[in-house]
Length: 270
Length: 206
Image (cartoon, rainbow over all chains, first blue to last red; front, side):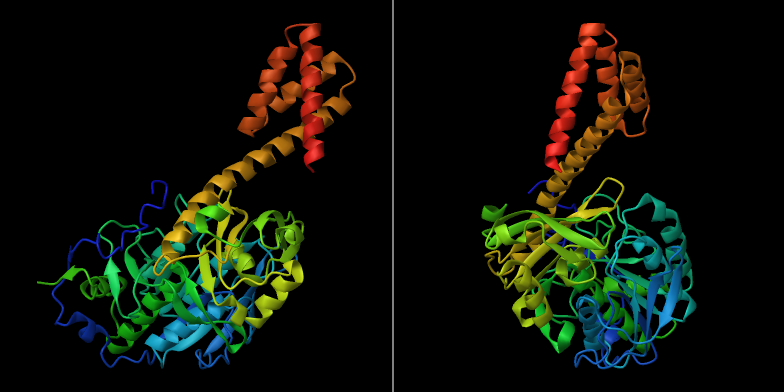
């Protein structure tokens, strides 16, 4: 159907094109993830909060909530908090599944009011950079021109500091930030149930496709639901990056991108 | 749209001016009468998350989520099993609201595509919402212009001021009426009558 987002269907198994990738030892998926646990890698889930005692989350290494003062300034409130919706819990549980020993932090930026959302989102990314996170899972993005510059700068800073910003691509028409920046890992949902299966889109800005359609995910109240969306594919890629970094510490942002491409279902590593 | 997705119900909720809640303004299907004008806090539920994150999602088996089921049942007496929800965006990238489809009948592997389709429909709905807000705004501003101008000169001055506003659509309309009003006394009366009708229409929509 015309009018759909340009990347919708880009990861359709019948349409995805083969991409030339660097020749990692084969099978590339084994080189990247076999035996990896996520140990020693810090992951921030920037979302609606995380339910730390959910059985599929298995505890958190830390939690902060970014809130607004009466004068509109952001402040960091440390300490465990509830998940206001369930979405952050879903993301944390997916990361836990792929990287069981990772240190997962909840960075709650989605609160009770839409106003100031750009500021809390930006402050959440800033917190992740200043607190030694290696991977940042972000389900939200901004379409606001006001935030283009600040988000572009902080995404570049993260890239050069080898902090992997993993962003859900947005279905809505038009540019979204930072999900379309070259410095981040932009993720869309693709069919399939193998959490390790990813695809590389030869026509970015959306680069990676991962499991995110009708997936069973953790939810608030210790429960679980079946969910679809790019924001559920994103923690699959964040979890895979976390596992990769625990097995191969010190990889740079561009090396991680190349490994993900080489481990993609549509990679030609010959 | 409800037929397109074979859904039990569809609804549109808009962000309230204070940004702290969503108010359902249109609905069709099961529970639709009960949900109009219901407000839901922004920090709770799937619609709130979609508005906050600006991301569309689909969730099934939501009746397994006890808090969600209770919140929705209180509002509508209809508890869906699955929900598709996408944000409605304004031209500056802000979120105007959320469009939802409840219990769409989808085949295996159709959820992703249904979400894309709802997103495309949502883009059209957002255009309509933006336009409606512009005209509501126009009505309110014109009402002030009419109320504050007791002769033709003041009326012309109020229109001139409107025509220089930054809002292109408002300014364009005001400029057209200013030109009409400048043609003479009869034309001025006509312009004023048309604007009064527009203002009355805008008032009736509130």
